[in-house]
Length: 277
Image (cartoon, rainbow, N blue to C red; front, side, top):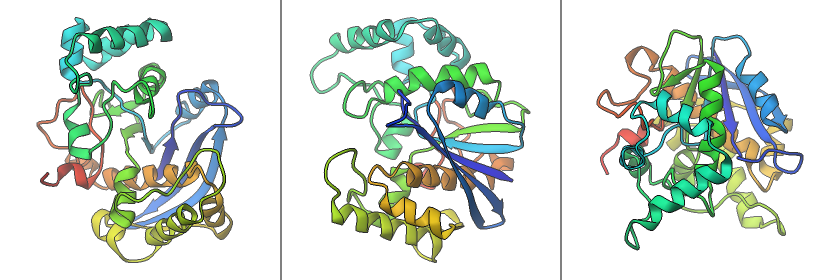
């Protein structure tokens, strides 16, 4: 099975491209084969149109909190509200979220999907710092238009399958809450050492293989690049691929997603989102 991981950004370009890592899944081994940069959403559209079968893990929220969708009067179905969002300008979408937040008390401005609380991730409404709402605005309509099977929001028989990933969940099993990446500025030796530790943990028996039932085989040149790259975009893409592979191995039993999840909110595919909190 072809497995991919995609490190997403809401504004791809030469300085901050989208990065896709391509792998071959053979039982419990994930063989890393390619790392591809895409500098525009046009290139991402072409990527999504490639023939399957493949499963791709992408690190942006596929959906929005149910409470927000209801408060805004959007269609309650994922297809319906994503289609509505696709017709909004970026400025109108962001203004809509800010208007809703203005109605909520301090400390409760952001609503959370159930899966965000399980994963300890930012609200899918977040517009600053880690602007995942902007990623949703750019990414979800592309998924809808591409016709891929979007798990669990719009599952179909299409052999191209997109699942929502969150690379921090893999990293935490190795590094705890320690940092391993940075955008800009002088290289931090401690973060480089953390990336090296994380890459090594993907290849040898330990907390990653115990949690996911998988290990990775990474070509030497790509391994060195993942350690050297301060932004860790390529490494994050591999972590997304690992989560996609974990879900793929469970595709006959719901992709590792609880059967009672709200499909229209979406779900992050990772064993930690199924563990007690």
